[in-house]
Length: 428
Image (cartoon, rainbow, N blue to C red):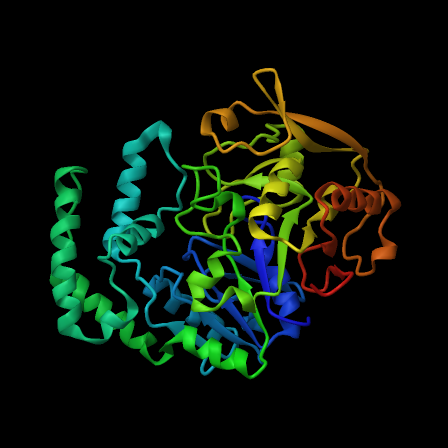
């Protein structure tokens, strides 16, 4: 790669970003996670061995690559420590390679409690959160009452802040949700204990990366979730709580957008979505079930079954536009092997009117009926192919059609779960 790269999901998450980031990190000096929390799950398969990462950037499995968790991430201390322990047991070196922004907002126990009681109270109108406290943690950040990592390095400062925060959250938990309150001393002691483990890794990540960029080092900025779950540009209110589009890198890391030279969008050869919310090309049963079974469509973080549907080019074009995507990576093309016909969504019918653009209106989006175009499938297996010219003709025609419709080149094609099951037509 010739410069710094941003990798983002171009659908509703779960596009296979982890594998692609891991594959591309052989060409960079560092990988930076810029938003989200441990609600993300990036699955890596190397020589048949599967590793699921939730917070630590996917480049950690390459010994020569530095890894950074930036300030845009909401941090669960316990989840990060568990992940570090797991990797170290696998023989992965962490010391000296992982750096954490000292201004990361923390996910606290009361955030998890609030997340779960809220979802329970919403009943039929559930957002479908992972229940891990991500949303409430971001709310505290915006409300300027968050506990940040550097607050935990001074016991008295932490105690004073926690006292005020618990006055507020305990009142809400007890009086509105009829839930349990949290004890100040217990939360304080537990937080100090966990933070002590991570203190050696905490630093000013923004300044550190800026220093490295000035030396000519190259970075890959890794997003979590997908553009259609972005808090501003996604299918609101069924979205995540952060900006997972490429523009979130500058705020989530503290680097100039002028450093971001290429943006790779990851899209499956079909669509999936976890949780609630509109999904115009969804297939219930039939082919949808076949895609789910073949693609092993279960969340790496929650284990929840994913909803499946045909590739939605209308939604993909929106992701390309709002991210400024310069090239695409098409994953799980092997899941379509053996299908005689493949459909792609090229428009929506809303109350008898045809739309070629992804609507922002929640009601319109919920009433979208997909307009499909049929393409020829292929009988041959694409599993594990690493050379583009070895793909079946109809698979190449499918990719060509996608490029023409989206006006963006497909530079990477994933043909299986393993790191090596990848066609790199051109480095992004």
